Length: 429
Ligand SMILES: [Zn+2]
Image (cartoon, rainbow, N blue to C red; front, side, top):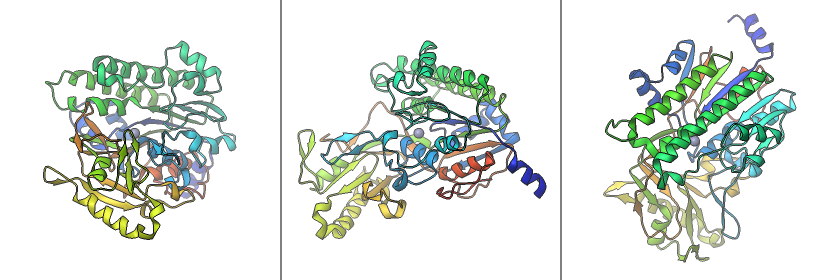
């Protein structure tokens, strides 16, 4: 592009459609392409760039999407994990009410741009936008999950569901898989409906079902003998069809995922480990008030600050204990971060003191009095940090050390808007 062309491109009011596909790994796509699966997505690669990006730490959907939607790190947006502990040591799930930074759609609404946001995690409870917002993951009742409210009536009428109930995966694996297909069909219907109205500048449709199928049916992926093998790939064919169908209707198109996936070998309960190391006790299903350290998923270790005088010593001791943890002679923990190494901002104090990440295959758990250090469950896939992706039609992207947090300024660049100074990433264009 010439400089003049570049300026013209920046000045024009632009629209952008983002299809976010939860937990779709870059490496998985490469395999699928090589096998001739997902042909729609593959053919898109001829007219745009597909780049591998890294996620957030911890690699949890709510943290990753909160980071993407605000463009800042957890110490500024305040979402550190799927669960948190309050001052009375009760667990709670931080939702959009805890989000402390402005989202992309709030910023665009302020600028008078029309937005449509469907099913993005951590958007429940819904906040008003200049357009439509349908909450995703963490919302349960559709009637409380849309802005404006009447959108809920329409969606309900069409059989739209927010999220299949993952508890069903334990008791009724066939039924849960069918729910996943149904949920995807609901997303498609909703997207096509709002696309037809053509009254938007920014459109984001989130598919959560990929994360679900990857968690619960990952072992079926490469095993033709597995009873879910065929259905697993049928599902991805549907996702690919959706990509083709949506991309055919919009000019500026982005596909985005928040983390990768790999096989889960062992669930490792860090609280059980801390208990065995004498750092944590339980009273039934409560943590004993004399705790020295406890963990919340995944790998977030909190130290008791009331024992401040020996805090640094304790921290060192716990870090070395974490590295000693091994499973059948293999070390489990890959890295332990102090919170200051990862995060910067006014809500840093809410973070765990230490954040441990594990080698591939080990899922770090933080159970209450489980009695089991290593366990296996009906879950066969787990998140990976370095294998998320972004695809943008019609643009060449910078690939070096690209991260999810860099996609937020990229969105503003694509929309031809100045990049807000608060954003921590860099535009990939
Ligand atoms: Zn995710």
